[in-house]
Amino acid sequence: MTADMSTSQRELARKLASNVKEERDNGLVQLATFFAKKELTYMELMQIQKCLFYSMWMSDKPDTQHKLGAAIAALVNIFDTQKVIPFLKSFFETMTR
Image 1 (cartoon, one colour):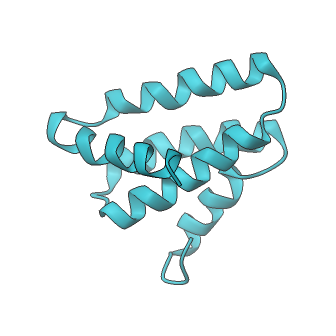
Image 2 (image 1 turned 180 degrees about the vertical axis):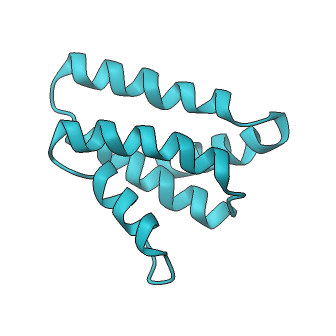
C-alpha cells in the first residue's frame, strides 16, 4: 500500500496479510466495518484487493481457504449496487496481474 495511507489503514493491511490466521480473520472483520464507514477511491480498492490476495495466499489449508473465500465473497453484500461494480472490477484487475 502507498505512503499516503493512514495509520489505521496500514494496520488493517498488515492484519490482512499476516501469517497468523487469527489476525487475518480480525482484519477481515475490521475491513467490513471500514467499508461501511468510508467512501473508497478506486486506488484504495485496488490496495485492499492486493491485501485480500495476500490474505488468501497466506491461508495454506484448503478448509481455511474455502472459509476465507466465502468471507471475501460476502463482502460484496456490504456495498450498494453502484459501489459493487468498482469493487468487482478491482478484484478482476488484481487477479489478472
